[in-house]
Image 1: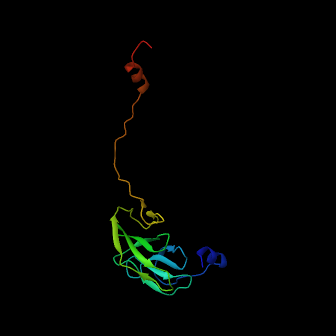
Image 2: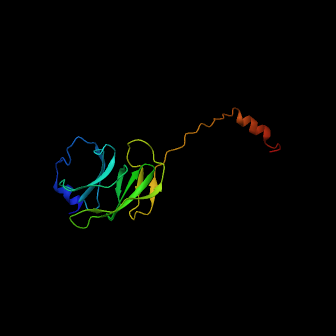
Image 3: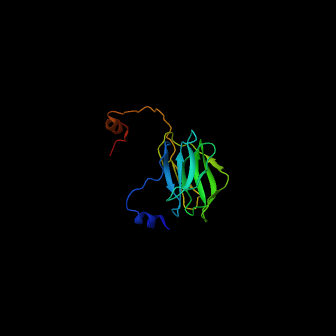
Length: 160
């Protein structure tokens, strides 16, 4: 069942998970049957996948910390941030069971610090990424030129 159809059928909010951990940054799979999210239940932020809409099977995807999971449009790959890099893991969501491959590092990148979301976006085919990188803090002096028009007149050739 498509996620849109499921949401249209359920008109009142439901509690999906209720536990003492901080779960956030949830992303629905393209078919709406799985939800990827970040949780601190292991003592640090890790990426998990769980069945949806009913909580059932749960799988830890990241192994060395992880946040901001994103699905490839076809649902066959999941991306997430781990430390100073972007990770990818192949996933199989075709049947009623879930299978995940071994996470692999794609590339290193400087992501902004802090718990905000959307530090990156991935194209539908999973081949290109838009990364929100921090701006270097530099202190350049500001020069203010006074009476610049008078200087311009003085420097301009005469006879016009």
